[in-house]
Image (cartoon, rainbow, N blue to C red; front, side, top):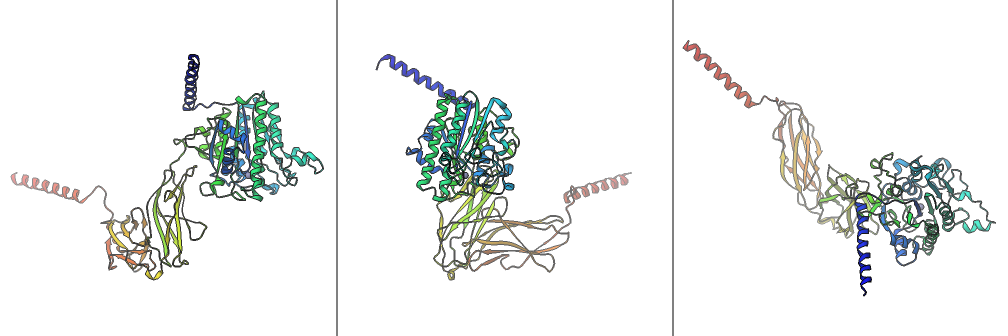
Length: 599
Ligand SMILES: [Zn+2]
């Protein structure tokens, strides 16, 4: 190798180190490089699995090229039905249905029901509010946007941004006639008058070439995958072909950006409104829905559109687009940090987005389950942002069923499966699923790897006969008027605990109250307050979870314990003080008597 070549390589090497350092520094300082042009394309109902698979095997070369140059990040659909209208509303505003009012599809509905993103909230309107006419905006949609249906598939999601949209193209701009060859060619389906991806992309390309000297945000949507998936499934050749058509259309747009000579100043973003599974998509949302539907993809040719978490929320897209245009969305009303917690994707990290899953501890459940019994499971679940959902998932056939756990106090939860209809030999698989109450809906499972636990129902005749074991009984030694009587007790049983109760009476009537399990099998509760002088009789009753419902008492002979409620304690005037005071009085009297005698 010649000296010159070595020096040149060394120079390139050093130079590249400095360049990457510069980029890292920019990120660390929270500075994000911005662009003069934003092109944002969504595919309707493009399942992440297929998008990734087909990029990797060379079937979607245009999208793969963007990803290889930039980034792909996973997005969670957490706060709205995975559907087209709510998806596009969230994508374009950063807000969920609590703000947009859009949580289902309004295709083909009556005009009264059609809903639009509220005035002023879309990326387009935000850009216009900040930059005015120095940024051009375009909306190129495959179906009509008009409130008045010209077809059966009108949509009005973007209707309120029409004044802020410089170039508005959708199928209402097209004259449709079966006899006009072009309109048939451009239509995905004449009956629905949806524009094919390639004709939609051609309109986007025209806008880009016409506006290459302007800053711009152009928004478009291709409908083919959803249209092919519903009748044919997302595993069909038609669905794959639909994704290929989207990729070809994306190619038309990328070519236009390159032909216009503005590729270096243009960020190209591609995503989907929701995933797909089989022939459908829909609720529930992440993390409870099918991940093929609730976890989507976001691809850009900008390497900075990512974060250390490796995921974002679908709500993050609008603040991300605005950030790419150099707009800080953090003070926009309604504040994102009190609604969807949306952020530019590169700003989302573990400091400003809760990412810690709930912790599950002290899980205890029946080891042996007999015919006719209930299966009880208790545990503690904690999270800094609270618990959104805690469930037991179980199956005795092929389909998992879900039952919500009962919250007993701040951290303890109980699940009870009534297996009374089950017979000996039935195998039941189960696991626990819980999500925190943060916008990320962080999820935890027990067992952690979601490998289900299994029990087999045993013959009822062998149900256990052992009584629950009651230990560590603790209670208030004295009770004053106006105060409660506290009791705590540890109860254990091989078949689990069905209930622990305190029975008490201050006259001839017996009352009972369930004690709440807190942790490690400790049950706590209180009764009262009572009036001074009341005589309270009480005992504890613990019932196990076996078919026999074995019962144990404390005291074990069920002979009640007695407490007598005392007068309210007099504050600051204790027995000790009375003794000291009395002593002083005595000394004074002695001194006086002594003085009189000696006088
Ligand atoms: Zn859709």
